[in-house]
Length: 439
Image 1 (cartoon, rainbow, N blue to C red):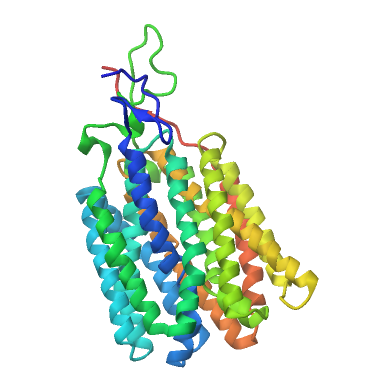
Image 2: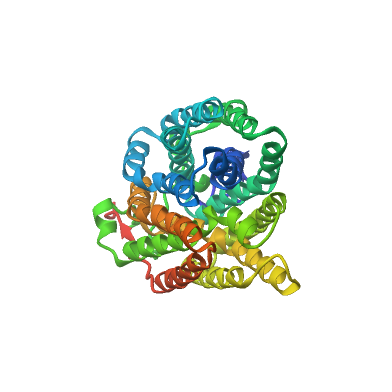
């Protein structure tokens, strides 16, 4: 077997032994899963907002409450999901999660008796399954397989997920418009059963299970500055949860991630009604435009993944949130009635599409700073800490629309939170690297 120098194999390159490193197959598997999960659930939920609201006869605030709790659910269950993944492995969490989501879509298709029934099914089955499987298991899985190319691997996953929005949001909206909400829900469940569940067969928890090391290396990474002549080799080690919680960087990551979610979620959950009812678009035009935004996000996430392994992650995060905040100001002033208004809305689509992908850099930074061993648990604490914001900001946006007939008073606070999040990321300092004792 050829001896490797311990560096990572790039995409498409062979690992030692002449074979493609299995971590890149894991990128392909999780990306394919996220393509459908994002297009149907994480981004595609917007096509359900208006038909469910109108079919059940509920307010926009009530509708936003359910969808916002669904977004927050991934945070609320974060510590438990992280513990389960770190203890039992990603695959044992992923398979039952997909089965639960599949069953939830079918139940919704044939039984949607009212607001509380909708909330129970969507939150207890559809959202719980998606959050456990895709917000935790897939991200934690890739973090196990990569160290040097972590940002690129996670960004490829997130980028392909954006393409799911481009392909499936307009398609699902057209299906619902032409055939009705029930067939849209049946089709959603079918994707999970026919495509996502079979992909779990090739899912592997970590490289050590296959006799490999992260990035396709042949030996564990040495500490920075280690391995010099006459100096005993020291190996870098991961942070424990307690050690990570003692660092300033962890709390700034937590605060910045929370402010970012506060800024974006109220607007993104309400984006369909904002574009249709506030800005004057047709539902299909709104679906098409959000699909275009997803394509821009695809390109952006690939670029950020490439840059995230080469330049400061905190600089990427700070700049992205500043641009995102500016985009919200463009949306606030835009409309679909005048040339200037249309230009401003398109400017928002460009800004949001380019910069929304920076969220994955938060998790790449977390893995870079604290390692693989307790990544899922540390990520779970962060998502749990900002879970309140995932509920509060969309419900506030819905209340504003019900009370004032416009979303302006939700968009402006969103811009302020985005600027504040950018400031948090700007002041992060990388925590010191920990090492084992020399042998």
